[in-house]
Length: 85
Image 1: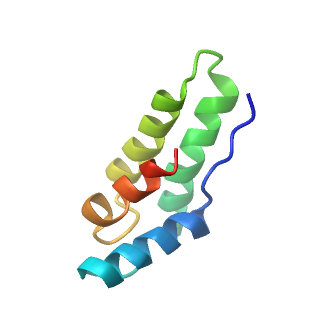
Image 2: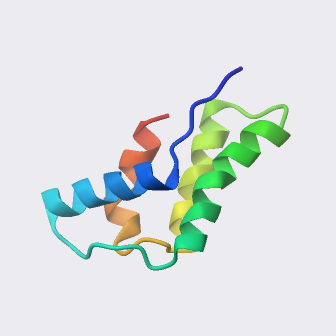
């Protein structure tokens, strides 16, 4: 199956859009942690032969939540990022 993944710029854009809409702190706390979280889903798809859309989306969400790469990431960016799956 061919997958299309969000990149770091896409997650940052979603984050910015949510902050403008609902308020909060703009910005990236750590670009490396953001890249790690975003590429976690891609790695899951490529290296787990049993990966499903649910497990891949969960991998992205878990990475965004655990890495704390974005300011206000839990409430502002995780759900919109997961909705793209």
